[in-house]
Image (cartoon, rainbow, N blue to C red; front, side, top):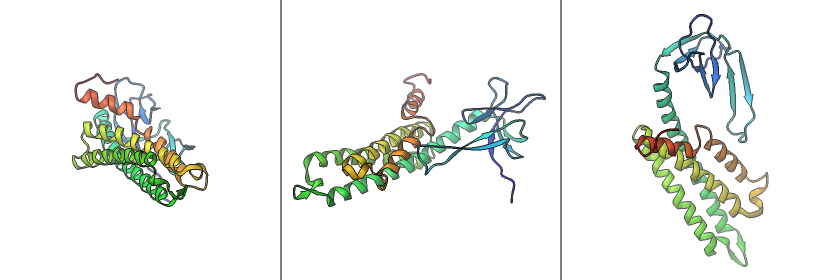
Length: 223
């Protein structure tokens, strides 16, 4: 069995310093210094954490004097670039999943009958599906734009915000428009809902990405 390896964020350490974990990054007790390192030994601990969405397992790495090789001293710059790439990739996943939720809901609205006609023929249902379609297509467009432009900060933030909200909206409407079957454990709707809300917080919530976009455009200072 090969020894597990992992990437970690850590500055060059001086004698006696110890990296400590802060928000997914390993940072030394030296203020303002962040670097990208590759672990050369297994972490002190690897702890699997329970999540709301079982389809996306998460784990916590504990680093305690774990040896590592410095890859870049510009950790902040690398981290910002990786964040934008990750946001763009996640936005594509969210847009695709939102589209799948919309597709399943439209199919159900065509098949489910009430009062002798498909529920999709009722005006109230049509309007909700039209609103959902608009949100999903707008999110899909931003996801494609961010990917085509190689994930610039402004488009990555815009796509991250729009796609997270569109996915959560689609998952919620999927449950609502499926009626009673939509809240059962046997139906897939709840898995979409859990994944949507878990993904929305994975790299920062939609509001945080909108603040980042505003700061990039010069409309507000970053928080």
